[in-house]
Length: 348
Image (cartoon, rainbow, N blue to C red):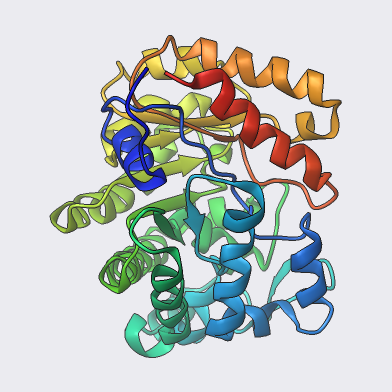
């Protein structure tokens, strides 16, 4: 049995493919609607108010650490927050779904977008990071994050969620000047934003390319990968691990690995052992339980957790997570049980 580690040691060791005493686990959207404590705060404030009030954002960030025993906190924010400073107005529906008021679809609109200074336009996120870091102390890591350029661009162009990303792909394929100018601006902003989060105190950052899975490998490599690579290579000098995540990314794994980052995050649509083998074990791996499994009985959840852990073959470098965000209706007790099962079944 390994000597007991702090959560920070466990998490950072896994990111760097070093030995751990147990597999670390956190959950995307762990600070959110499935938690009773979150819903209580949400009943008094709009989603954007919660994001922009550092004290509230910090409180929500800390809730799953205190109640669920996860191995890392992730700052409570939204991937669209940088858009406001760029000059892109947006709002959220009652279900917290994003809506872009005036979608960006022409070169003139792209040229009008501003390059933000995160310390000015996103100061509230950085303030929340500092509050959380002080509360966490030395033994629990904090994850920062940003949407990746393609995902941010798709929201801006489509005006919200999309089934087929028609307008995004048409700009990419038919308006090369507008596309590359937009992606260039976004990659500059994302790099600045993640660097500012690291300077504010985050121990790890994650790049969310949530919608890149809609692309063919050819289009990803030609139109998206160079911009992600700019960000990921630019973050190396800060010395913190970087997680490169996308959903539905089974067709993009090798390209994502080439893009950079220390950890590749995968969703549940691929065997995690196969995914890791395909990237030749050169990166750590994160994932990949189907979020819907958390609606099953605890005994069934435990079977699925055991299967994921066994697929990794006991190698150093696995961070347990869901394949995407926890669903709002998920029983909180089942999430807590998941965390316990991961630690129990992976103890070295």
